[in-house]
Image 1 (tube, one colour):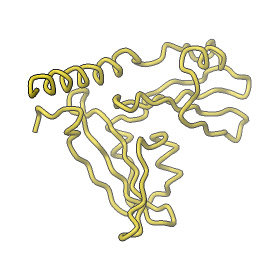
Image 2 (tube, rainbow, N blue to C red):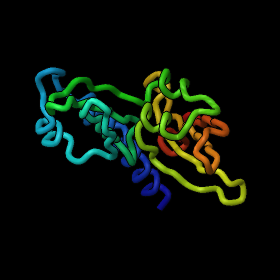
Image 3 (tube, rainbow, N blue to C red):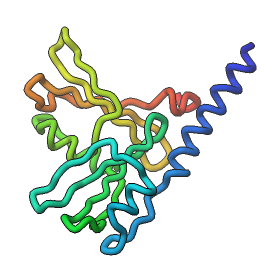
Length: 165
């Protein structure tokens, strides 16, 4: 029985790695690819933000097992302006105590998980990310009920990489 559990866990972890690699960075050409190309390849976005210029940013995640969120910026004309991975070390580290929830979500995209801690009166947002493409991490932003970052915690992702710790 223990052998089967080990096999199942190994296959699940291999699947996690394959999802990030299989999805990869979407291959859209800024100035050329269109919203229709994005919808055809990526499906429905996890989140969409309208821009003041009439364009929008669509966020696509590799969850539940991946560690990436791609933001595809579309102009008002429906043409791709940019494509980038948002869960980078620079972006993760640029979130500071005192920032508003909207600022966090605009930069990183939607959290994988969001829960309320009723006793502490906080909202917890979870973001899985890769540190240097080698270590799976979980970043937790705890926000007050008025949606201001209260504190930040970062842990090794034991589920994605149990062998490292």
